Length: 244
Image 1 (cartoon, rainbow, N blue to C red):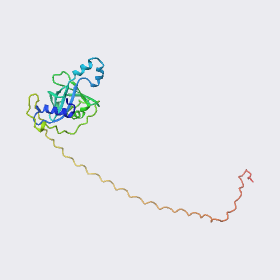
Image 2 (cartoon, one colour; image 1 turned 180 degrees about the horizontal axis):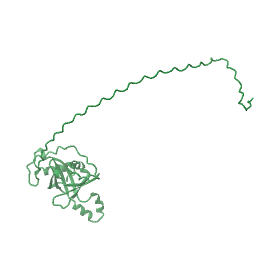
Image 3 (cartoon, one colour; image 1 turned 135 degrees about the horizontal axis):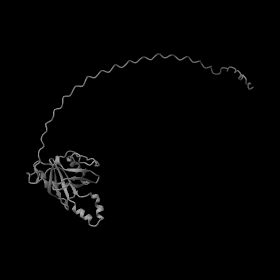
Image 4 (cartoon, rainbow, N blue to C red; image 1 turned 90 degrees about the vertical axis):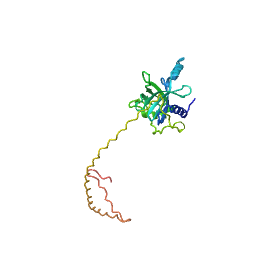
């Protein structure tokens, strides 16, 4: 049973390379499971047989992003080995909606073939980096407003095919993607020259400060040891007798 991501990716690449169109490169691979939120498993287990029924009704898939499409193939419940291809969507027409990136279990709704309504897919945090790479093909408006922001990984160069061999020719079940029409670049309008800037007026010259008036000369203090002039006795104010 493959547990590590690298081993599971290698198995998916080996499986898809048998039917991949020539030149198709693998960018990201995400393991998902159907059914209600896995957080409810503890509640289901409290009801006899309900937890077992929910676990057996869950289905597992691999979503593989290539440089031309998104491939959906089944995954084994017991070994995680990839199975048959059930759908191939062009990158610009990936029918996914209500995508919500969360701390542990992220979710999205994918319209699979032969289903009346979109199927809920749960993605564990273990595959968060791959989910961020897959978010580059989510259609506008498909991300839930309450979702955490997706941290887009740098542009991937793609995983090489097994032992570096080119992919075999297309087989039945993996349609050849249509090439995008080349868009002709529109010429840029000629830039208009900027109007000449007005010269700033010259700064006014500073006015000279008026000359300062000299301070009046201070009276010299009497020489130390000189006799003190006699004090005149206080005669009191008119109407009040002097205190003598």
